[in-house]
Amino acid sequence: MYEDGMNVPDEFEIIDFPGGLYAVATDIDQKTDKERMDTEIDQFLNGNGFERDASRSELGNIITSPLAKKIMGNEQMDYYIPVKAK
Image (cartoon, rainbow, N blue to C red):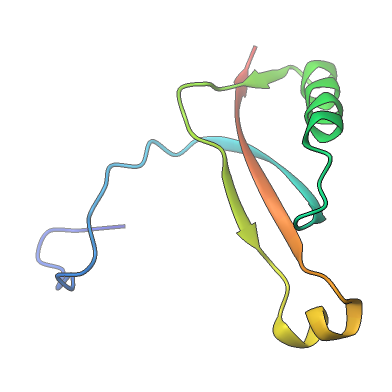
């Protein structure tokens, strides 16, 4: 988190990030059946008192190290879905 007086390099932009809760799903990168994943995520959220928070963007992150990719033959990706209480 940024605090006044921090030395921020010129190439970095400071943004306001609203934060909040995220549901996380992991799948094989480039092979995700997004429609099926979304259905499963929505079922989970609905069954646990949550819903998607459309005011924030979905995020993603490749979590596979180069060695794991070499062994597995693919990369895994985490999908972060913003959620809020119903």
